[in-house]
Each structure stands twice: as C-alpha cells, then as structure tokens.
Length: 521
Image (tube, rainbow, N blue to C red; front, side):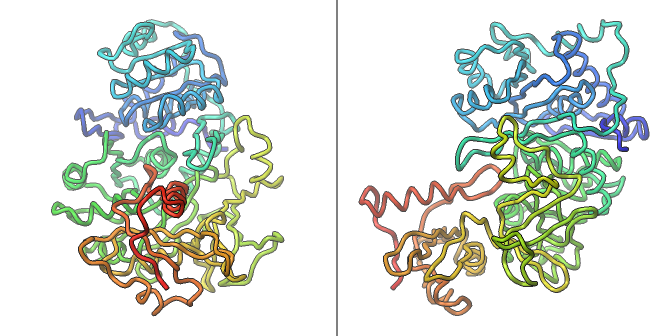
C-alpha cells in the first residue's frame, strides 16, 4: 500500500533536499521545513480550532506557501481541503460553501473584499486570515494560531494510515455550464496519480518545475506539485502569471518541466525573453493545443507536449514521448501505466480503430464521485469504476489517442456528425488566425450548421477562411458563417466558454447586437 502523506514520506526520505521556492517572497524550504509547516497547519485545525476527522476547510487565496502546506496538512489531519476559485463572485462562492459544509475558511489579503461579503451572507465558524494585515473582525490570525499550535503538548499529528478513500480535497468544477459539482479526491487518488506520473512521464529527482497556474485547480495541485514531491524534485511557486518573470525564473532556477495552457504558451513563445536553458519539455492541458504552437516551440528547440486529464480522473492520464510529440502533432499520447482507456459508441461497445467515440477511463487514479450528488455520480461513473469523460476521441493503429472535442459540442449537419475541434484545428493553421471556436446552430435545411468565431491577428484584413477550409475539409464541415471577434471568452485554464459565444450569437440573430462580420454562402 502507498502511504497517504506524500510530503511526509518524501521528507523522511530526503529531508534536506530543496522542496519549494517562493518567487514572490524569496523563501526557500527543504522538505523537512515544508513538512514541519504542513504538520503545524494540521495541528492548528485539529488542536486549536477543534476540527474533527472528515471536516472541511476552505481556502480562498492566490498561490502562496500556506496554500501548499494546507494541501498536505489535509492528509495529515484527515481534514478535507476545499480550494475556492478566486475569480468567482461572492454569490457563486456561497453556493459552493453551502454545498461543501465547510467549517473554516482560510483567506489571503488578495481576497479580503470577497471574504467581507461572504461573511455577511454566511456563518463561518473559523475565519482564518493568512495575512495579519487582512485580519477582519471575527477573524483569527494564522500566525497567532500557529504560535498556539506550537505550544501544544499532544503527540505528533502525522498520519500513519496507508493510502485510503479518505477525502483529501473537494475540487469544484468550473460551473460554466451549470451548478458546480464537487469532485471527491481521496488520498488514494492523490498518491497514485503522483507515483504513476513519475513513472509514466519519467520525472527525475533533479527536475525543477515552476507552477504559475492557480492552485485552486486540479492542474495546479497535481500535474507537477505532487509528482515532483513524490520523486524528490523542486517546485518553484509563482503568485501569478507574468511572462517575463516566468522566463527569468526558468533560467535562474534551472527549471526543466512545466505545465501551461495554450493561451499561456502562446504568450510565452511570443515573449522576447524566451530561452531553452535546461528545459526538458513543456506540457499543455486544459484545452486543445494548436499544431502551430507545437511547431513554434520546436523552432526554438523546446519540446511542447499535449496532455490530457480531467478533475474526475486525475489531470495526468496519458503519456507522450518527445519524439512522438513532434512525429504525431495533436496526439495526447498513450494511456499512462495501469490506466484503461476505451473509445466507445452509444451502445457502450468499442468503436473500430480510427473512428470517433466517447473516451472512457478506469484505474486507481479515478475519483470517488461527486459530493452530495448521487445522480450525477451514477450518470458518469459505472459500477466497475469506469468514468465517462464526455470527450470524443479516436485511437490510431499505433495506440495513440486524439481528442475530437466534447460530446455536447458535436453537432449533426444533414445527418452527419461534425466535430468542432477538427475545424478549430484547421482554422488555427491559417497565419492570420489567432484564436478560433466553432459552434453548431439550428438550420432549417440541414438541422444544424457550423458557425466559427475567429480572433484575427490584424482586423484590418479579413482573409477568406471559407476558401481556406474548403481546401482541407469536406463541404459539410465548413462553417456557414464566420464571425470575427476581438477576443475569446475563456476559463482560467484555457477552455472557451462556448455558452457565452452561443448567447452572443443568439443576440445577434435576434437583433440585440451587431450583425456577424462575415457570412459564407
């Protein structure tokens, strides 16, 4: 069995190895030091606040050392951490708070105004300010609580349990298409994902990884934080995304591997500070990766891989070698070790090689379902643990997988399935196109037709994208309408908010907005 306390185990094995570098403060912590801070946080919850096993504590903050220690303290204290999206409104956070049943809230100075509004709406039993300057009336200072915890005489709080179904986190989905769902992340999932990523991605003890994506997201917590700690590498923590700072840090700290999303990689490759340094590879997730970005990084001598994962199954589900990232642009690779992947049709049976179907995943990295939502759990999780991702995929004759888009995004035109991701990939190859998204909309003749929203590099010239697409796509796939927009609505992890685009289009058609910029015949 695998021990549930990843940080504690690494601190036992490599106590004096550098674990964490905080860019904003300059703080550098060994595994021994970081583990001591996580144990102290656990002591604050259990001994000072009086929380019990299974209780929930939420955290609302930008990336910081205390966020990291709270994440690992959850395993030690058998408390469930609920990371909150700092971009949500107080009303949206209130919904999550009530659903989670959290008893405590840790918050940073960057979120104090939101916390004030939440405190007026909710009864928060334990309100903990991570910054003394942000200590509101009714709040306790985290520094003061830590000092009190240091004076306790109880036995060490390090958990001795093996990997279990105890929940370490509740990670709420973005909620862009409805009420957010809390994904139950057990210790078993955290530990297995960490070790399997090390093995399947061939991470090394000398790997150094910057984290500039938010820790409230599964990607921030589990793509490199836990795997790097499992193998004994070093994490470099950024408070926010800053292109120049990231490239400077990659060079200064000797970073070797990093996660981002396509929009981030676009900004990174266009920055004048771009350097290869000791970089082994980058990996992209959160949204489809345009082939042109892979090629742009290759021209700089940097490998850019496309990854795949979901909060519900761990955000590391496939592995891709450097040579294959260049040889097969667009693939997400092969399933990681001990991961079962199937592409199935509506009848649940596997589809032939090369055909598109729904991607289903099963393995020890799959979550325990949705919090307080048995119907949603039953709809997505089979009795044998197989998870229906809702993503369309195909697998080639070599066993490499490709994502074709979301099932909900697919539309049927003239009785034929059309996959927007395929069209978006072709649009991204046009030199004048900066960003693109395709929707299916009702049509009296064909049932549904495509509409493409496109961001151009230069609005002064509008290329004939219909003619461009007609050279590579069947006629029924070519969008009947092209709408040029200034920007694309995206989530923090790069996914296009297609519901917002659909609403914009509906308003245009109802005369509530300007006419589309271009209509194809």
